Amino acid sequence: MLSLSASNRPMAVSFFNKLQEMFKDRRVDTAERFQLLREAVSGTMSNFHMALDRTTGKTVGLKLLDPEKTAVFEARFKGLKKPSEGEIALKLKHPRIVETLEAGTTKDGRHYIVMEFVQGTGLHTVIKNQDKTIDGKRHILFRQMTEAIEAVHKAGFIHRDICPRNFIVAPDGASLKLIDFGLSLPVQREYMLPGNRTGTPLFMAPEIVRRKQTDQRVDLFSLGVSVYQMWSFDFPWPSSDATGTGALQHDSRDPVPLDQYCPKIDPVLSKVIMQCLAPDPNRRPPTAEAILRIIRNVASDER
Image 1: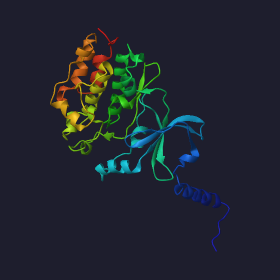
Image 2 (image 1 turned 30 degrees about the vertical axis):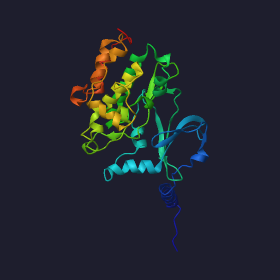
Image 3 (image 1 turned 60 degrees about the horizontal axis):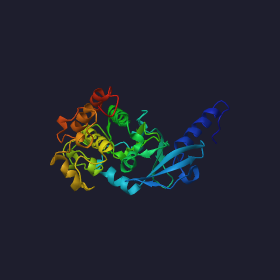
């Protein structure tokens, strides 16, 4: 019979406790832990809820990923050990990026992400409603959008879905935060090869649409389209349909100069926005940091 001396018992207990911890089921029962406070907002590959986290008593954003759609996207990178959306989001710490608090797997096998709940409205809704709360503040929002992208790039990723829908504007219209890293990829050669045509069509860089080699400058093109729309309430290529067909105009037609819509816009802002829209990535600003150097000292929307 095996017996343990009194001196060995604490070590044995510690060992068994470690074993229990190793094999503990860490999957979360979201129905038990979270009280959903608002009807879900459906995204491309997920549902987003405003929720009460019963473990902390705090209101949070709860994102539940669609397992089938996520699997289809992840299958594009089979064998590459691509980090999950949650793993990427947890690495991004910046005032202009929504803070991710936790990521894991639910009891029913779905990936979930818990993030700070940000009060505000999607920039796409602000644009659609031509909301006047951002009047006189567009230069500030442009700078903040660029700061968020710079943070993503410096962390070693490409967002790949920069568009107004993925920025939440504060109620006073003076600040915003970047969200949604479902399509984000590491800045590594194997993730930038031709062929990965994902994103929001009317904001896609031509090199994505044409299935060419990509890099972080795809985000700068999408930034240019987003900021152009924030100023003009229209696309640089008017009457575009919302499909890949409309996106084919991005390197086959010249964009309408922004100052035709906004003749009073500060010329420094207008020039850099139009540079972002260059179909050739080598003619765009090289980095988000370069854009910030140009616009940092612009003090108003208009000349």
